[in-house]
Amino acid sequence: MTVKSGSHSIGPENGRVTFNTYVGGMGSKLGHDLVIEATRWRGTVNLDAGNPAATRIDATIDARSWNIIQAQGGVKPLSGGDRDEIAKNSDKTLNTGKFPEITFTSTGVQGAAPNLKLQGNLTISGQSQPVTLDVRVQDGPSETKFTATGRIAQTAFGVKPYSKLGALKVKDEIDVQIEVTLPA
Image 1 (tube, rainbow, N blue to C red):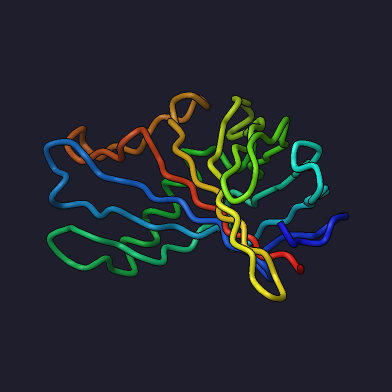
Image 2 (image 1 turned 90 degrees about the vertical axis):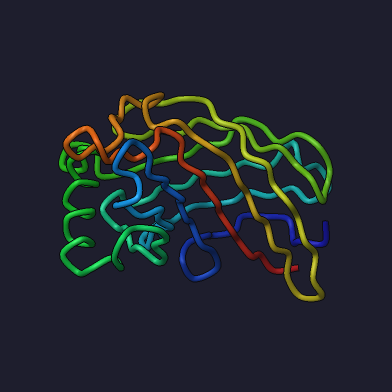
């Protein structure tokens, strides 16, 4: 890893956080699989390039800052009204009035670049659960890109996946991807 050791601020200026949701149920042909981006988030990476296990990460996402960047499937394209309904239901599903933030605090890093495992505690809707993310490290001449991926179950955090009339349902599991670029 050629990334510079020390404390690094992370957020939309040098990274991206996306979630993939998938539809299921009898009415799945009506719904859309979505790629949703968090537009407001921040964090700190205290990185030890010589000893990745000593690296610590804290991040906070504004749970109301969703932007749908891609919609696949469905009988018709996603409309503005559909987007508004999804935003309203996301706020209700995640109880953002009471829990406006999603947080992650790392508890450990294992492995060696380019493949690491990042363990931490993820808190959604006031409930914390341990998670493990697979991290891929790509060194460049002036920067290092970190891509973390994982799958979480909404119900593990007390979140009931969205359902419309019991026929159209959002599947419990969501794929998470975090990309961060730090200076070399």
